[in-house]
Length: 369
Image 1 (tube, one colour):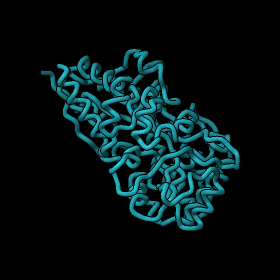
Image 2 (cartoon, helix red, strand yellow):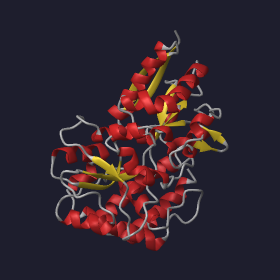
Image 3 (cartoon, rainbow, N blue to C red):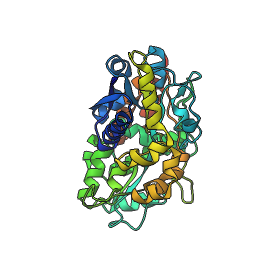
């Protein structure tokens, strides 16, 4: 039997479905796949090229694709209409770069809103409602790198002025950028200062254990809405708008895709499994039943899948469909960490104009690296 190695990320949502689907694949006569996992922080920042030299299959985040293209470390994937014809928002296109597709989505995500339904009278509809809850000590938001930047991205895009994502130039509309930083600064002043060291998993764990009722901008983790995962379930909903009656467009797109290493000794076997696990039949069945957060629209629009997931999918689909795609050029990954740190600094010291100047400088430098 052909044996492959795969790398994913260390959370039940990222690891358990890959192991389960790989076991099914092997039982059908496919390759045997051994999965390793890396931390969420490592997933967001570790160079894919290094992983590609050791693993046949790699779960990646779409902002890496420009760098992966420049390094030649991933195999270009063939067209697969059963996958690419049913995207959740821009999830499918986020892995397309320079005319080729470098991954197929297996997990669709964006910043959404999380609430404790036993502590909140439904999700906050706008930012004023978020601030009212924050003044009562009921709000938390992840601000650890890169999530401060992701929240900034979401707020400026929801305000109608998304950051530049398609090449060098003005990074963000000055007035919209200042409004977003001020909103985040006002919120950050009212939440536990541990937020600066917290990623979404840490916030959701805190929500499941304490009286925190709302995380207004947070990447959704379906596991927390599943029965029995934690004593107090969390439900997920569309993001609050920055203005009363506004829409839910502009959330910073996340999620993961499955890629095949250009250095694999068994690329056909790796490709066959990637197409299998990203396909609609597996995505709407074994993938979700083993704790995965689906990337295929067939799962997101399946009523039985949605009910089993505590209505995670129907509660957030409008936000996913309106999500904004981050920059993906070679050099962006070197921008993301420092830019997020600069946003966090501005939330603490109030130097909003200095932060906007520095974000522009960092963005410009990302095209010269």
